[in-house]
Image 1 (cartoon, helix red, strand yellow):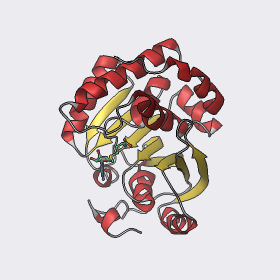
Image 2 (tube, helix red, strand yellow):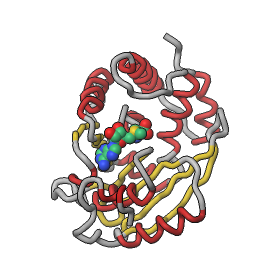
Image 3 (cartoon, helix red, strand yellow):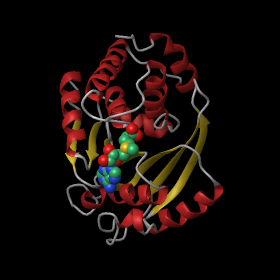
Length: 245
Ligand code: SAM
C-alpha cells in the first residue's frame, strides 16, 4: 500500500504551521487504506490517488479549522463539534484525529455511509467521535441537538444558505459554523448574508485560499451565532434546498 506521503510534513508546516504527530500520521494512513478498501463496495469517494487524497480530503478538512486561532484553541481544550453530511467522514474524521479532547458527532442521512464510518472509528480506535443517521433539518429541531454545539462543520452539502440553515440552529450562542466551499462570488456573499442574519448569525470571515499541490480555489465561510435562531428554522426536510432563504 502506498505510504501516505510522510514528505508532506513540510507542507503541513508551511501552510498550517502544524505537523501531525507520528500517531496522527499513522491514523491518516490507516484512514486512507480503509477508505480505499471501503470504496470497493461503497461509492465513498472518487479521490483515491495518494496525493489527491492528502490534498482534497486531509489537508482541505484541516485547513478549514486552522485559520481561526480561537477555534483551534477551543478544539484543543475540548469542544463539542458536529459534522453535517459527513459522507466518508470529511471533514469530521481528520478533525477527530487531531483534536482528541473534542467530541465530534458525525451526521449523515445515508445509513450505509454511517455504518462504514462506525467501522472506521473502531479500526482507528477513535473514541472521541460518534455517529448519527439523520438529516440536519430533523436534528436542528430536536432539543438534544439544537443549540448544543460549539462548532458545526459542513462540506459539499448544498448551497451556502442551505448550509447556514442546517448548521446555525445547532450552535450554542457564540458558536461557529465552518462552511467549506470551492469557488465563491460577491453575489453569493450578498445572498448568504441575508440568510445568515435571519438565522441569528453573522458572517465573520470569508477565507479565500488555494490548495498547496494543485492550486485549486477554496473558500471557507465562518459564521458566528450571535442570536437565537427563530423556532421555524430549520424548516422541514428538503425545504432549505428547494426554497432557499
Ligand atoms: N462532507 C463529505 C465530503 O465533503 O467529502 C461528503 C459530501 S457528500 C457530496 C454529501 C453528503 O451529505 C452525502 O453523504 C449525503 O448523504 C449527506 N446529506 C445531504 N443532505 C443532508 C442533510 N440534509 N442532512 C444530513 N446529511 C445530508
